[in-house]
Structure formats: structure tokens, C-alpha cells
Image 1 (cartoon, protein in one colour):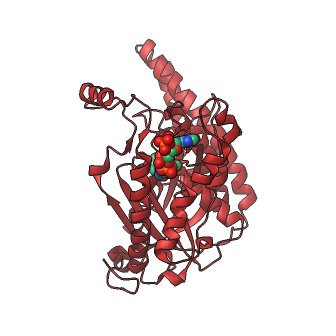
Image 2: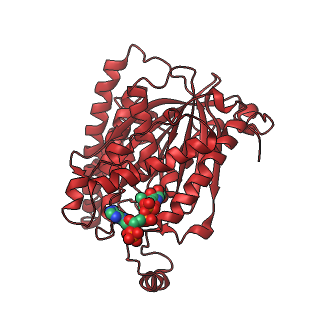
Length: 409
Ligand code: ACO
């Protein structure tokens, strides 16, 4: 394992291209509905004292019927675009890290790309459970460093409440819903994402997961039944996951720090996946550092899986815990098993004079995106129904092209 002082393992692309990927925008969104520990104890055998003592969680936000992973992700994304002061059309790539997508496809990323009006962006979902956001930021940063894209939106979004077994008191007390997002942008200025360590140990796949319909449909349904698991509901061996998490957090942070060519004492804030306060305290003991160096908000949101790190990041910035030039670290861990650490040198350009104008253009882009999607659907239906009526088709196609190429967005 590299030591904290090792400088030999620097990410090669940093040196080779001279392009850096900076975090220039951030945002978060949680549902309005709050479920307290007392609310939980009304329908399962648990208590506020037990949950607080074992996890540090007091309450979590739960999506209403009208909310989903995409609606929460969209709100977080819009905030991040506001902070970055960029237009949706400037995005090259939209990545959504989630374990609770609306569908297997179309991806949640495609739904959000459409609703933003990010009509020049590619979009895909990424599945790495609670490590997914860190994986996503690294994918975005690498794409930027390669020179192939300029601006990437990365969202971590979840509606964990939809995959909970609400009769399993060992898991349903832990999770909540929410979303967070960042915008990464290319810059010649040194800094941004300095290093990342992504790891997986698939042999621990039986420790937590969400069985679903897939390529092994018949087999997995059978296996699920044999193990007492239910389709589309989360199962977890809490004790084993706890041990795994406390083992990997410290080691992977040290690896990411070494890869960035700095030492642990250079890190101003560690933003860990918010799973359990005791896991974070154990990691602090392992690293022999004060637990105050870790950002913690699990108390108010529970475990929001891939959303927890970007939500904590947005709150840390708001609370003034991150300053220009600071080195910060992310560390995620979860299903797969997967884990991931990253070091970022914070440095955000101040918003330009066009901020107000761009805000109006963003609002217009969201509105136009809705019309565009509706127009495309209508035009497809008309084409199907009246495929011989060419003049109408031609006019609709011209209108569609006008909307697509509108200089306003
Ligand atoms: N209320 C009251 N009692 C409970 C509850 C509850 N909600 N849940 C379990 N208990 C009981 C158990 O039945 C057990 O009783 P027993 O001794 O009579 O059998 C006792 O409390 C102790 O249970 P443990 O499971 O040993 O409790 P533990 O201290 O390990 O805490 C917990 C359980 C909170 C789940 C812990 O193991 C944990 O946080 N694990 C990590 C989970 C995690 O981080 N998962 C997220 C991974 S991220 C991702 O990818 C989704």
C-alpha cells in the first residue's frame, strides 16, 4: 500500500494533458416529508433511543407519490447549474449515480437531460451503490482530462424508501431519500479532482443488494426466495457491512491522499458516505484524526446512498467549511461491495456579470425542454398515424428543428 508521503502514484492524466476538472457548481434537494424515529416506532418494533445510539440518525426525508429519483435529481441539478452559472446546453455529459432509477432504461440520466434541455449532452446511469457518486465524479473528471468534453453534470439521486422492506427494522430505519449534484468543468488552472481510488469486491455481493428483474430473471427470483430476499426490496447483513466499511474507509482515504501527492494533515475536510455515525467515528479512530474533520449530517437525512456525499458537500459549502485552495476528500462505500476515495483541491471561479441573464435563459431552457419533449412525442404519433400525409410531417419536422436550434438556449 502506498504511504501518505508517496508521490510516485500521481494520476497519469493530470500530468499528460494539463487539463484539470474543477467543481464549479453544487446543489441538493430532499423531499419535504420528514419521517422521525418516533414515526417509525409507530409501525415497527424500534425506539428513538435505539436508532440514535446505534446510528446517530434522528430523521430522514421520504419522497411523496409525486416525487421520484429523477424529480429530486433534477432539482439538485438545477441548483448546481445556478451555482456554476452555466446553461443546460453547455453540458456535454450527464451522469446519474443511483440504485433506485425509474427504469432499467430509459436511464434516470436521460430523463433529467431531457427535462433540463441539455440537448448537446450524452447521458447514462451508473450503478455502484453508495460509492456511485465518487465513481461518477471520477468518470466525469477523466472525460474532461482526456480533452473530449468540457462540462459534466454528476448527480447522486435516490428514493431508497421505494426499495425498503418496511418490516425489516435492521434496514428500514437507516435510509432516506434525496439528491445532490455537482458540475465539473475543464480548466488550465491546477487543482480540482487530484486523485481517485475506485475498488470493488464482488464476493461480498450477498451482504447487501436489491434483487431485480434482469438477465438471470428466473434464477435470481429463485435465489431470492431461497435466501428469504424479496424482489425489488433491499436486503442487508448490517454487521458485516459495518465491519467492511470501517476497514476500507481509512485505507482508501490514505491511498487517495498519497496519490494526490499530499499528506493527511493537508486535508481540511473529509466528506464520507453518511451511513452511520459510529462507522465515521471508527474511521476517525483508525486514521488517528479528530472526528470533527469529517462532515456529518446523517442525523437529519439518514443514509441516502449515492446522494449522501453530494448532499453533505452542498451543506459543507453553505456552512463555510470549505475555502478556496482547501484539499477535501470524499469516501464512499456500499453494495457491490464497492468503495471509493477521492481528493479534490477546491477552487471555484467567481460568477460572471451575466449571472442574472443566464438564470433567465436557464428557466427558459427548462420550459422549452418540456415543449420540445411534448412536440417530439406528438410529432412521432402523428407520423405513425398519418405517415402518408407528408406536408404536415414536413411542417412539424421544420418546427422541431427550429426549437432544437434555438439560439436562446
Ligand atoms: N430497533 C431495535 N432493535 C433492533 C433494531 C431496531 N431498529 N434493529 C436491530 N435490532 C436488534 C437486533 O434484533 C438485535 O437484537 P438481539 O440481540 O436480541 O438479536 C440487536 O438489536 C443488535 O442488532 P445488531 O444488528 O447486532 O445491531 P448493530 O449494533 O450491528 O446495528 C446496524 C445494526 C445499525 C444496521 C449496523 O449494523 C449498521 O449500521 N451497519 C452498517 C449498515 C450500512 O452502513 N449499510 C449501508 C451500506 S451503503 C449501501 O450500499 C446501501
